[in-house]
Length: 213
Ligand code: AMP
Image 1: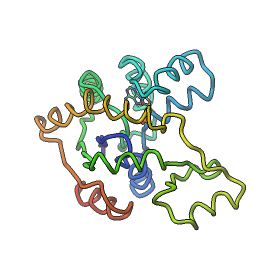
Image 2: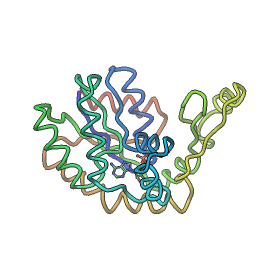
Image 3: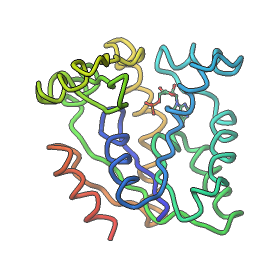
Image 4: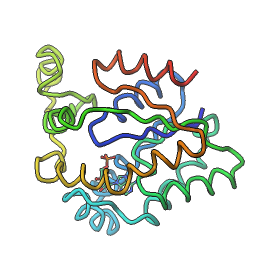
């Protein structure tokens, strides 16, 4: 199964992709995660990307295309993949289409995770990652037990640097301007499925798997 998860920052793409990855045994490929890794590793390219990411702007298309083309040929992606956060521009969606055509493995579905813009702010400002388990949590929506589980084990609830209100505003603007047009791109190709991304993680997951059959 080769799918793209489309949706605004905070719509739950990463959370749902991780669940799907565990269930279907195909990798979640997140350009955001790969870029953050490059930043942590302190590569020259990572430092350049960091400046753009810190303010919520997009990294150049050719950079993410390079990352994605190297990643899609890895053996674990042979039976499929879940693209999370890529493509984000019209150019990237065309590049992806070409790449998959060349590989003879076209995309099956683009799933749009539809959510009210007001809810996104809370999801994004409250989002934390447990430094030990990598589990995604939210100070507004996770139970106290889940939050304590991380901190009691000596972990920290890490707040992503670009999850502050100023940057979030810009990320949502960038999404509307650059990424929303991809909805029509995939609709025109009859690959688009839309799901309601509001509600609990399990409720959304049920809708997602229901849409993929
Ligand atoms: P994410 O974790 O998907 O929200 O991505 C975090 C940041 O990484 C974004 O705000 C962008 O700066 C950068 N980024 C991630 N994926 C892409 C992409 N496909 N194209 C351009 N920039 C990206």
